[in-house]
Image 1 (cartoon, rainbow, N blue to C red):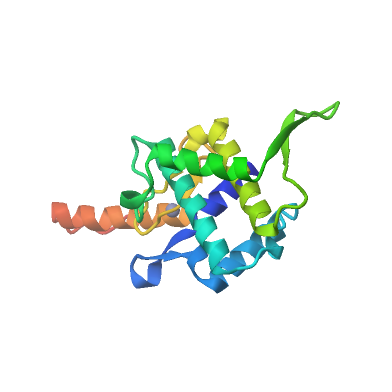
Image 2: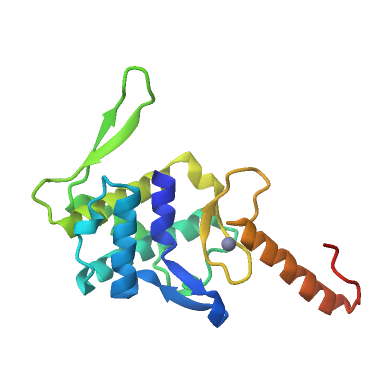
Length: 207
Ligand SMILES: [Zn+2]
């Protein structure tokens, strides 16, 4: 859950392919924010994101946390290049760390170790019951994303290098280069096209 939920949050910065790469921030439109909050709750019902208002206050707070996380994701993939669209305007590492830690501290996120007799140990968390839904949801998302960053899956984190893709993904096998097979295909086509122009050959692609 940690990995997929963390990726779902940082990958709310997208590009629109039909406009050849215009960047879209899902969290910055009320409809996009509503859809995203509902989708998170649908996929992970323990997150009460469906009860969070899709208003400016939620968008502002969530975007602040997400940009801090995107800065930490960029740090995690270095020296490889980060997801490009906002790489030049991300907070510094110290600021990003302070932001996520402040969210966890203010919401009084309390980890506790769970270890079923015949299973693996895991860190669960709780927040005070009187916390409002917005703070509860954002603190929970932050906690999960920080668990991902502090865990072993971080070492497989990559920014997809395909043209017009800005997504972070976690490699599932050693040779995986792209976030999806569609990106792999597009990258190969692009490499062929520009490679042919540079070398000025007239060979046809091998299908
Ligand atoms: Zn991709």
